[in-house]
Image (tube, rainbow, N blue to C red; front, top):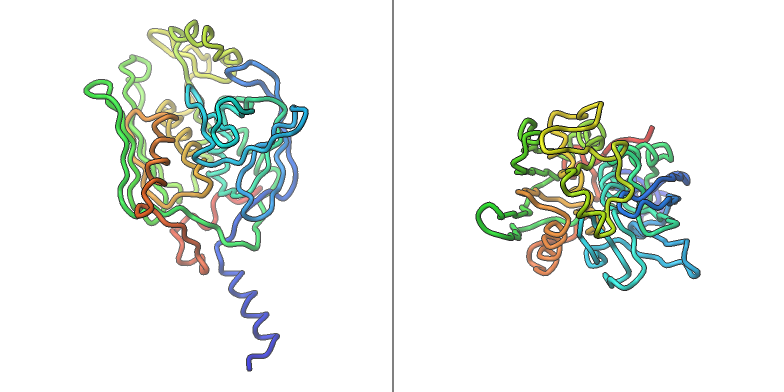
Amino acid sequence: MVPLGALIALGAARRALMLRQRTLKSITRAVGVGVHSGHKVELTLRPAAPDTGIVFRRTDLPVPVDIPVNTYAVSDTRMASTISPGGDPGAPKVQTIEHLMSACAGLGLDNLVVDITGEEVPILDGSAASFVFLLQSAGIELQNAPKRFLRVKKPVEVREGEGAALKWARLEPFHGYQLSFEIEFDHPAVNATGQRVEFDMGSGRYKQEIARARTFGFTKDVEMMRARGLGRGGSLDNVIVIDDYRVLNAEGLRYGDEFVKHKILDAIGDLHIAGKPLLARYVAFKSGHALNNKLLRALLADETAFDVVTFDDERQAPQGLVALAPAW
């Protein structure tokens, strides 16, 4: 018979080696405007129990509504990723979740409750950097539950259009998490920058290399967007604005390849909507919110294409994914 003390010690040792889920240590808040609605909104980010996932809670409604983040909750992908309960477009919604979701992926956060007083996540500075700062300031806490990964077992691809209109995105098996993205805008300001980027999430450089990349828009599209009720909160403070020839922001670009890096930032956020971090290589050409969600749905529709894995010994996990962006 093994002594009880030895069993307890063995269990503690296994938990110490286990790659564990993460949540926040404390509550943190942010106030800003939605880039599309232009409405002021407040976020309160709260710790959550293991296996909660990320849940948005509309606290401005007479009866608060919880919207768990998952692939099938996505109800609109025009200009942003929008979720609603069960993906019902007529139900209460939360728009533009991708930058906050990207920050959660970059910090390895699994469980979080986001109280929100409106239907759109504030744009803040147009990147994920402000969300990274908020989350790290609250502190990251390890939880006594195994971190669950969605592991891609065979290639899955979605494509749209032909010729110049072709766009595609693919997930491939990979022991880690890598992303490769290429854009093609045929615009002098964009052509003068890097249009293809590769990023390894295990590098630990999300905050430095990806998080500060801002969303961008073209002046020629502003009237069209406003007519559709979009872009009302956009300004030079939170969007890279481009006319027919150049970037209009006085400070210029934060990265030499900021445009394509923002597309990677968006993709990281869109893919984190799956509810679990990926073990995969993502490769995309001119993809966007709609195609990224179609890719996740195509993956989940094929039960032979993925499984869910944990690591009882973090030394068996992909290098770099064990200690993503430690808290300040």
